[in-house]
Amino acid sequence: MAKDYAPFVRKIEVEVENLEMVKEAVEAGADIIMLDNMSTEEMQEAIKIIDGRAETECSGNVTKENIGRLTALGVDYISSGALTHSAPILDISMKNLHAVE
Image (cartoon, rainbow, N blue to C red; front, side, top):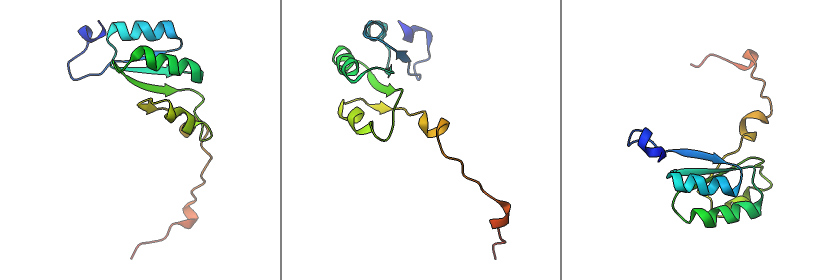
């Protein structure tokens, strides 16, 4: 079991890419299973396999356009790299600073 190698205060999260990996993660006793780059249908099946035995997180290709569909699946957490790697640039100029009185 994965937990045999971690302190009792730590959660074990396993990233999976297919349903076979989901089954392995559940059997290993993962606390959180990250469903990475799976289709909606695969995520639905994964959630059935997990059956509440671990928390779930979806990741990969998460956008503001599809987040509603993903939350409707019933996952516990959603990760989006777009928040960092696709964020627009904000130019903060020193010219706009002024003394606070």
